[in-house]
Image (cartoon, rainbow, N blue to C red; front, side):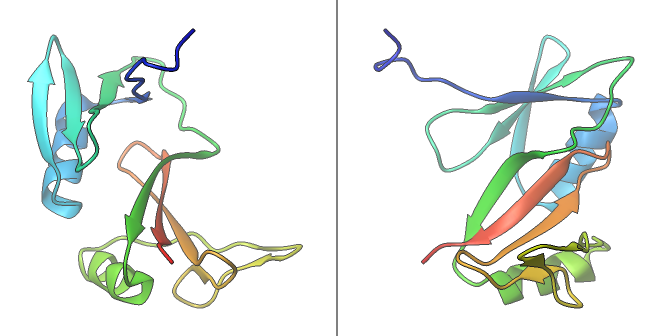
Length: 124
């Protein structure tokens, strides 16, 4: 039924202007505003919609993954911009001092300005 649909994802934030500043200035994404919402432009064919929600609750799961060629470089660049990476130490999930889990694939999680969980994930 939806095999030909160009699906897209969306998630909420508590302040759309702060979200725009974060996604543009920290992550370097192009954005567009539409009807009070923010469209994140990525190299994929579909935008990611970020919408304001007055009673926003940060997602407790990863809402957006950014594939990268070199996770160490990406993490270092984000740390230099003030990003703090999450630390996880349970079961097989164990992050290093930078916040990188060295499993397959390598991945590191961080939060946006609204507390939503994002990641950088190393492509093979």
